[in-house]
Image 1 (cartoon, helix red, strand yellow):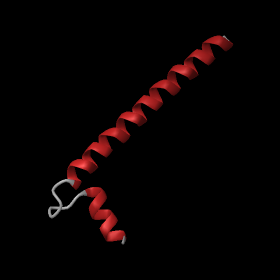
Image 2 (cartoon, one colour):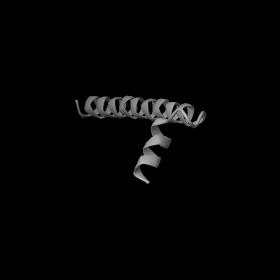
Image 3 (cartoon, helix red, strand yellow):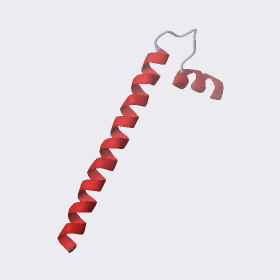
Image 4 (cartoon, one colour):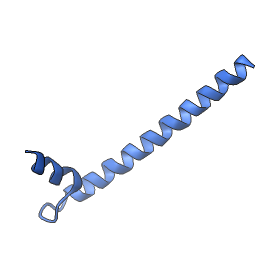
Length: 52
């Protein structure tokens, strides 16, 4: 099960669509992470400025 999940997530040569899906998911995760960090930084700076 673990090996199958690994091959599905990271993509293997046999399955043509999985590498694209994993790539899209990777990009999606990175974008969400960066957006979250950006928003968190904005909120933190705003709170810090309000405290000043």
